[in-house]
Length: 107
Length: 124
Image (cartoon, rainbow over all chains, first blue to last red; front, side, top):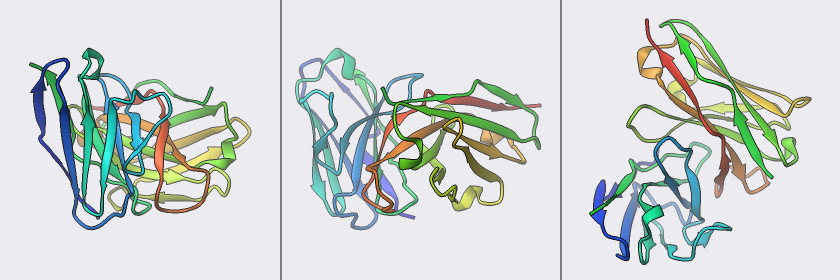
């Protein structure tokens, strides 16, 4: 199975900060990489698909980049509602795997 | 609107089976595969399996291959996941999620929307 490694596991940031989360695949996955946001007690929500395509309705302060093995989720000007856990997920095969998550906390 | 609504919480004894439901609405049920993903308390997301509602065919993660069965009822636009021989480490929230886009490729896909989740607690 393809392993997905996210970093950092957690971070503290203030509203207005720029935040970057990275995800590395154990092998090349082209651009078959998605990002989700999950708030406590809620289901994950799709933010970015195919590495850099913004899901409809998601604010433009979210962006994704990367291809091959290394990917980045960037949140420019962090908002109070962005404090959550973020997961990457590959779709290179029928059996997806997720990163372990990055918890974004209030500083 | 596109929606996945899951059945309610379950409490089961070790060794028992559980059958969860995921009812789809707002789109053509047979046009999109549905995946099941679980999340143990305080943990990350783990793929369990998937079903193609059109063909009724399913694929399972190797870890669950011997214990899981996914079925569908097209008359009610509902998919089911049954997990048997439950253990305490099966305690988790189980989510169903629709696979996009609308094709039969086994790569380049994403999940949207997700159901609200069903908590399964395995305890004696």
